[in-house]
Length: 124
Image 1 (cartoon, rainbow, N blue to C red):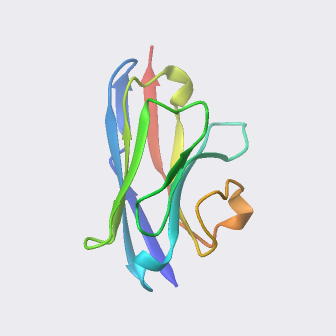
Image 2: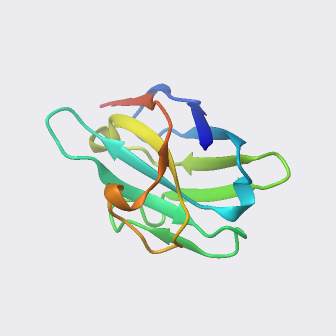
């Protein structure tokens, strides 16, 4: 089992920045590829970004490429999502997730463990 807890969400104006954190506990954090997903009201949960177990490789949805940066610190059992140039359409609940398969997995069903989510609201 891996327990994941997100933090760092909040309300920000368009063009602003937020940094989300995801603290992991339980089984070896560094054994898992990690990802971020988001879900807006009335929409399906969608892939945002993922990072390999080592942190060397990353993968992004086209909608956030160049604005968001995923990273991880295996010594701290924590992953991060730096979000810059935020847009109102980025408003959603953001979820941290872990999978034992690898980097380029973008479907929620391919992830094994989930956090409870943190709300990000971007005002225009």
